[in-house]
Image (cartoon, rainbow, N blue to C red; front, side, top):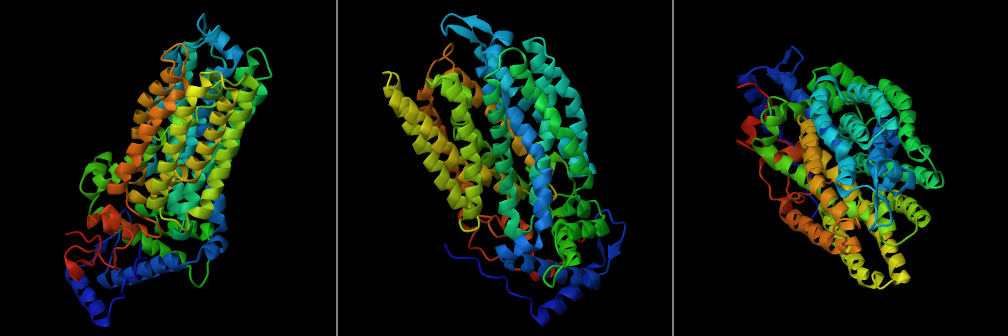
Length: 562
């Protein structure tokens, strides 16, 4: 695939034409600043913006690491909120493997010869936090647009600190369900805030690296849960399942302090008209140098924001379904659904999966720790791949590989049902390979692509819609996964791999026609490509240039009120 050519600089006669046209149109009213800039000032801002964009695109990866260490630091710190959501998400994949938990909240099953949760309650508990997260995402998207990412995170932490008491002291399964439902509200805020913040403070060379870091945080949260549950498997009594709930209190104070001292997203500050604060935030995120001027970067953000106002004047959810933004919303939602559809609930099913595959409880928890250890290693490996391979190519290759592994797991069930112990261990090993492949390819790319394909003005809303569509998609997936693996329900056991192989193959089919290549593009360039309705397969090779395409050079003045 040919590399995109560099945009052609404006000739002197074209610059004079731009200035003349801007002067005819009059002053440019900047959003929420309460002031207008003259045509000449706007023209200078465009030049500064283009210079900043060219500097970011031309910056080598090594230099980006040297210039932006503080951006990486604050991303690593603030996205740790995702650990809490990932930890809770993983709780009910492992806690039901604890005998004390099943004896407290389950009923005796003569079929299984032990206490079991019914498949309906197992599904309900596993999706309670997700249901609460659905509501929390809607609320948090408005909060992010109004108060920013930092304040939204702080509100969520205060709420969560109270709700953990309900799950910790739950006396019956109904109370446990309500507690998880209420805990889900801030988890929705944590996930969308982490994704939005990481994509907005990252320069172009580090955008894939910093946004994919969320996948590592997600895996780390589940690895932490696996380690805790491995320790809890040796305990008896109520503390074996209460301690995992109590661990969530440990994160609240450190995260609250991080949110207090972290710089706010400069993109949020630009949308709020707080340009001086945006410049100050950029100064805190990177080192000033000959090739990095925070004032020019603010100009780039203003230019992109004013451009996008033409297609989304308001910041409502409705704007995500209008015009060119509808396609961007479709991509974000579809890519987010790749996670459940490619077999995440099967391949990442936790200790319960390994128990149903025939391993004893101790081995099941050990393999579960290995599972999420492999996930962390896979995400780290993805950082060495992302700078060199396009998003589209890597995503499609990963999906085909995952489908092949799921097919093998399903086929091996024939030998497992003949009591072949080697086949059981082979299935467990294949699941480790699956989780590694998933975290090198699909898992990090989901967060990268959703952050890049959403417009800067509607990023919070687009991410919120995508996460909620993911939750809705995960509901039937969780139902099918639970009932297929539960011995008291359908009893497919690991034959389920064949089913998830089929759903996984649907994803690259859609991606071939609809998934664009956004690697190395500025947010303005991505805007223009969507406005031109560029086919997904031509995103990588299309020359964007420096201006808005519609109407030619005479419509250079971005954001001017007609």
